[in-house]
Amino acid sequence: MGGAREVIFFIAVDFIISTSVCMAATYTNTKFFELQSEECVIGAVESKGNVSSRIQCLDICLQVSRHGTDNETCTAAQYFDQTKSCQLYVYRGQPLPIVCGPMSPAVFASPLMGPFVIFPGPATWSQAMAACTSTGGMLACITTKVQNDLVGGLLETRGFANTDAWLGASKSTTGSFTWVNQQAFGFTSFSAAEPSGRPTENCLVSRYAAPTLEWYDRECDQAYVYICEY
Image (cartoon, rainbow, N blue to C red; front, side):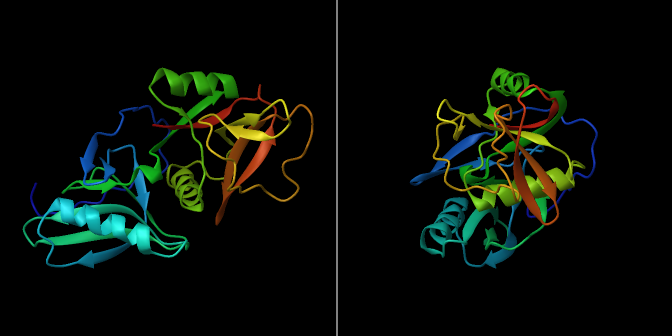
């Protein structure tokens, strides 16, 4: 790939139906995924010079996440062979622009970012889960603030601000929410007075109202937009 760089933003589209899964590439002790047209990353741009290879660029990104603060994560890396430079996308807890693929040269995103794809539906929670599963994914499971900010910005960028969108959590027999991928339900972003505790509201939706993506419990047979994770 050449040294030219092209950033493409997707704004207020009506239908997002592409479901291609990221291409995985293993580098040293981690995995990064080439950013596809449906996917986005979040982070302020930081440049590093005298970088000899894409592998070294990805390692620099990994080290930022390993040795940074709790709110510091390198979400993606981009290597420019002609200038031997590395461009990092670094999230530090502040609202940042959403940068979407494809980009040239390729951007390699951390698996911590998802990827997430929005579908307009409308679908019930069970229908949405089945649709995500049929294309090799699942309803989105948000386990960090980085992911929550990314999905919120993605909903706004795609034209779905102030719109309920299903996430991949429902109440277990104990009455507590659990993610469909069995990850710990530690990080949360519930709106005030949520979850409501109503016995019929057993599934989780998100809604982006700037500057925050907040969560609400809803009746599972309601039909909404939904977010798949691949």
